[in-house]
Image 1 (cartoon, rainbow, N blue to C red):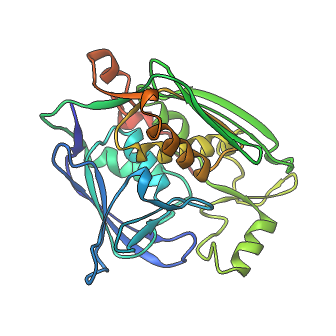
Image 2: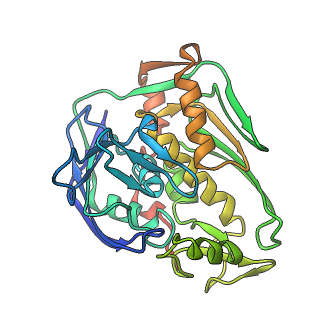
Length: 306
């Protein structure tokens, strides 16, 4: 069955790049609605933006979606990952600014509030996108692909010169709450030199040691260090799930990313949808439905973080 929230969610936080405070309200929605954002501070233009891959207008440091009227919302990936990872198919997200709050740099707070609000089943079957043949792209040393698989799986590799990160690899079947247990608390990360460069350019104005892992060579500058030894690759998988959620329906396939980011994942989705033979839309079988991300998630699945 399709799902939505049982109760609405209200959050307040600061945007990572804009440094602006924002109020966020996530509302239940009816079956077949999908995930939409509404910029309530925009009153003279169309302020509804569908959370879809073909609305992505920027995908360098974060994922931004924009509608035909030019209204945009950025840094949506952590919230989208939380919604998909908790099995929410339909919701309206109201926000009074241009950027989703960064919270602690992970999906942890969003997941916590979703599980607290509860999940409501709707009287409509879930349709999924099943990958039928491999699609891949490679640009400037970045490679991503998606191929047939029985469930949604994510396989990711990163390789950074900083010894605090280095080379990391993880492969995870996203079925049955794996996102909540293994990925949702993993934070965004960056190098100290990159922070200084971005802030000098007017970016990452809301960034701090409290909402990102900041490294400098072999040192982790953020208080408390890493939540997981391989937290950085786990966060890249979190980002990938959030960007894959923009397909508009749950995906059944194996995603592989090597040093990839938001732009590569969006380019992969665009190529897949431009290749009709590579996928099909099907009604979920009982087996498929039971293995979708978020199915069977419990509050106890979420780990406590400092």
